[in-house]
Length: 473
Ligand SMILES: CC(C)(COP(=O)(O)OP(=O)(O)OC[C@H]1O[C@@H](n2cnc3c(N)ncnc32)[C@H](O)[C@@H]1OP(=O)(O)O)[C@@H](O)C(=O)NCCC(=O)NCCS
Image (cartoon, rainbow, N blue to C red; front, side):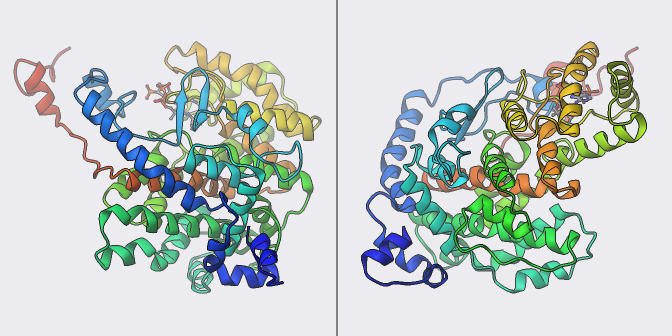
């Protein structure tokens, strides 16, 4: 977009010079390529739609809430609006109505027939429309124009010990960026609530633009002696992330585009998305909301499971060698369960089938690394683990999730440091949670405040007296 604009206006600027001019050039966008304008045009109709839903269906019941649900992590309680994606237990995730194979078929790639670029997904998440190749490219250029990293961020990271967990570094790095929040400044200056979404959009795009560099900084300072690699002047957003980490293999760049696309969103109830939504609902700015979500993603039952899978696989191969037979794997899984730990990468709170994000990564591995030993091991586990988990009788979904496969792809391309993996997940997750954040403010969604209960309150409501059942045999 910027390149076209510059050519059209005979400016003859280098890419770096255009980047430096940043947003000031965006008004030269060829028609239909300005993402913020595309969002702006959609808002009045969506606000009317929500008003009509409230008026017509506001008093309809979405179901009953049982005590078990209230004390069981609110599983299955519909309690929030989330526009960017919807998860079906059997079918998996749909981003604005599109399944992962549909995304792969419809979204523009960096090459014909290649993996979609996440910039196209960002357009889709924010507008609900599949972008043209030109629109996706305009997002790449908008993000490039916004990607300047203030020098204090690296200084802030460097104040942390080198062995600080990469997810803690991500959170600190995002917080270091928060001083540039447009939303915070606008709110302090008394901006009208109808305009909140505009500065939330600005912050979200600035943050998304800078996350690849922030992630690469963390990677290079933690694992590569601190020498940083400058952003590539022409690469797309995800490929540039791989480049700044120090990886150039074209297969690795394609893998990063795919990885960053499929991890972006998984409806609203998961810990990272819900946290971001909750914190944003208090009108905390996008930096604060996203960092809060990332602190949740860093939990081993959520995003950190991708790191845990690699630890678990390494332990397995250390104990059983690289080619264990089915009986040995079965025993290893049983031992994991008997030790009171979870089998990482398996199970899901909503899904009841193999995660299509797992299948997508498996397809990628079949195309790019069919003979890779770790891929073969993970495929082997697929034949054994669900059966063992299923036999426990209590695990509702014995099938693999996204985290069971992502490490294989990263290891193959030389990204060996598994403690970094959740950062890559987190960079992608920004696309979904921040897109929703823009829409949450555009739709004027209120502060989130569900009701909590004490045990006594439950006993009073359903039992004969408080403490009832305590001494029951
Ligand atoms: C994702 C996860 C947290 C969902 O939890 P959930 O909704 O409570 O799942 P379930 O209803 O099936 O859990 C029922 C029981 O099975 C256990 N369980 C579920 N998945 C399990 C697994 N992979 N390994 C061992 N036990 C598991 C639960 O811990 C729970 O045990 P409890 O009753 O003793 O507390 C869970 O499957 C898990 O811990 N998986 C491993 C971590 C992981 O891969 N996380 C990434 C998810 S994308």
